[in-house]
Image (cartoon, rainbow, N blue to C red; front, side):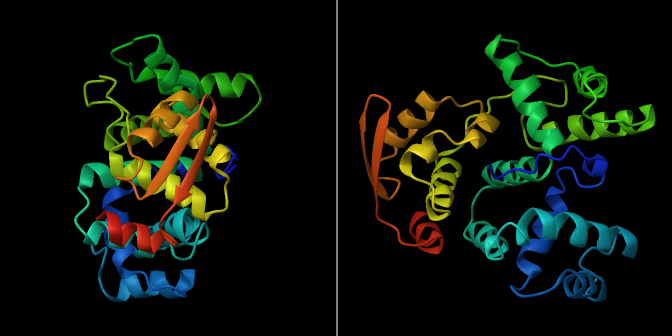
Length: 255
């Protein structure tokens, strides 16, 4: 399991942070420590509209935890795909997954609330669903927060859903299907992380896009050859012959 299962209130401070991430990714140099990077950001005025305290919090408690600690070369991968011209709409899909992996509150809201609404054929979602979701967690003893914290976190949940194009500003539930590049990026990321072909298909992260195992297999087959691999499927079994040797090679060949 690649996502953090701790239900913390930190989500209120580090929800989507898309603009901040776009600034920080190309600035980060592999090997920098938390303190070195936050100092670099402050001294070079990269987030001039923020206080030093806010910069330190974003850099050291969110950026490092979400990207650098997960994989020291991840910032370079993401900076490269953006530099190569990946559309912001697609780039937000990548950031959505990393945010969800980092913040269990967001991950669980998608899988436990948003996905069931999609399966029911619901077209919209009231913003109060987020508050009720937290209320249920409180009653189950999974969190123990004051109502003011509930309101703050529920607001952050609704904001993240909008920022990541999962729900519109008017509450309409949007299409969650990943773009071809997003899908190919994550199957290659999982492959280079050491997962077997079967484990890739069954990975829980596909739930973030509302995808079933059958959806994943179908998409893998549809993008075979074009995606830099050759796939064969027989029922629930799938085997993939991977052409790219590294994630960097995949990115260079695909964009």
